[in-house]
Image 1 (cartoon, rainbow, N blue to C red):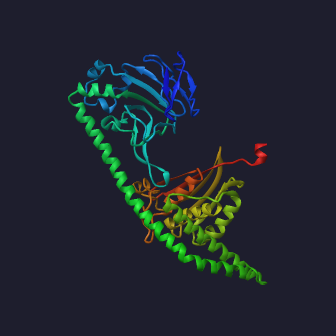
Image 2 (tube, one colour):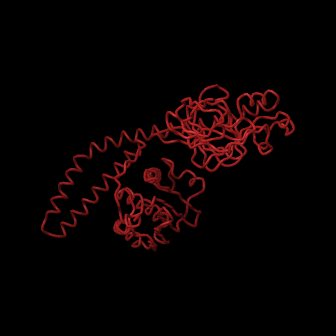
Image 3 (tube, helix red, strand yellow):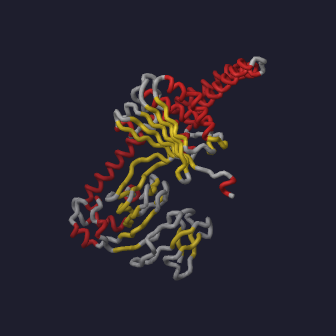
Length: 427
């Protein structure tokens, strides 16, 4: 017998009796589970490369509530004895890739599925999310083409896979279901088109931003070089006060270069990091110097709960600027009174930064899109890029950023970065 590897599409020759066992592709080396014959339980799981193996059932009551069957009576569906293969996927596992062959449809029994397409910078852009009771993968059944998007498990999921022939049999014997099926497809297409149009507009605006920033970098190159020479001259002076001024000016020029590079990278969809081991205590000291003392001077109370002071591996300048921007947002939300809390702690394999304020909060409709480009509110000269850039920088660090907010109560920003133990800890 033979089986097609889903990862490299190579045909592997298998000896008889291998059903339900894990084998390795002779071409790419990927592991997969050989599907069992219908009616035989092969564990209900998938290999790491998404090769499917599952429990084939002629009928399963648990799938009756799926919206695919919404216009048919339960008795009608029971009498059809549709063959459904039950599958399980772990969080983050890919069910199918864009461009894969598609001859079946999936019913979602438990969990969430993210349908996405590759967009700017090679990132996956979410088209929509399908949850328990929904179905997906219908487009390939209609046009006979390959998969037009990627499907990924957002959590642990249990699915039911139905082959094209079974779907055709179901639709041919139910008068109302074909129209219902078509309406569902159109709804998903409308949603996907809306996302594509928004992303197209966003991409055009970012492209324009990139072109503009490239021109700015070119125009700024000579003035910045002049400032750097002046800084070098100031720091070679005998007067220690002038030397200190030179160091301050040098730091400011460096920050200007970081800001310009951030905008350039973001417009290109790529954040290039200059990683180094940084002590959190040094980072907090820099925040004190650049912004926290000014916040205190305005009348706002600043609380520092720094439980972790050891090192993290980050791009110091980018993380510093990111934290400064979030602190500045909190400061602006409070004005001259309120409380700002900066907290750093280790949680398992992560280091978490929290910046909390007692300001006016963020409205729920804005909070849902706060990390999208060009989303701004309440700022006269806001560009709407600050939090979008912040997310791109944290994503590049393989971290996570989220915001919780309540109107008239305040906002908290959580930033989680990977913890890397010191050599002494490893030993």
